[in-house]
Figure (cartoon, one colour):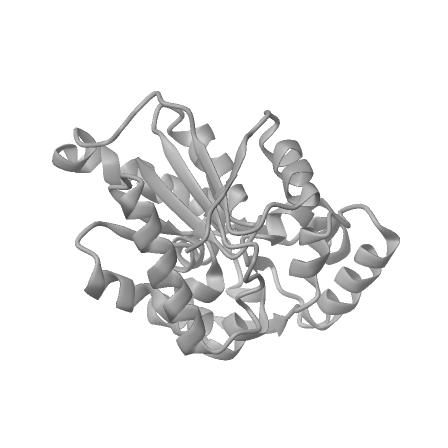
Length: 261
């Protein structure tokens, strides 16, 4: 079983990508909807949440943990690796690798939560593999609440996206990392506002491919994985909007189970 967690609905973009790339593998998803968003919390609080989320998924039988949250990835990856004896995947490194490969002029933009952007993690990782890269980062704190509310086609959402992306258009970036797993849900709006010549990097697809390759090259772990069972979806607070958006995103009926950590 692959365990995936996020602060809310955004991590379901990772679940969708995993279902596309490795459809036979069973997935357990936990959306911490009672404590969303993580992007406005302190680093220590995010670390504590990530530890609790991971422990819950391990109790469900997860043999791999996916941190489907950029904020938690930037704050808690090393702590989780130190505390849990199983493979931990985060969404930042795969997105960075794909962005550097895709960018022709190494002018890379990053959008994310305040916590992710303030951490400087994307700039650090990009420059580790491409020292000459120009990296321009913009925090977009309103996008997660808009997605969680289901405001996916509202004029207000389009206006806010346009305002956030304006500084990056002025920098003439050629590649844009969607540095939050909520953002692929707004991919069409983002692409329209940033321009069709800019390549969007979806971290959910990047990490799904990383896990696919990992399983192919680690047969000992692969043989321990539960396969061909129905995915499980857990949340810390059930909301009608979450269920509606989740079913639209995954294009299937799902049953949400409410749990308290």
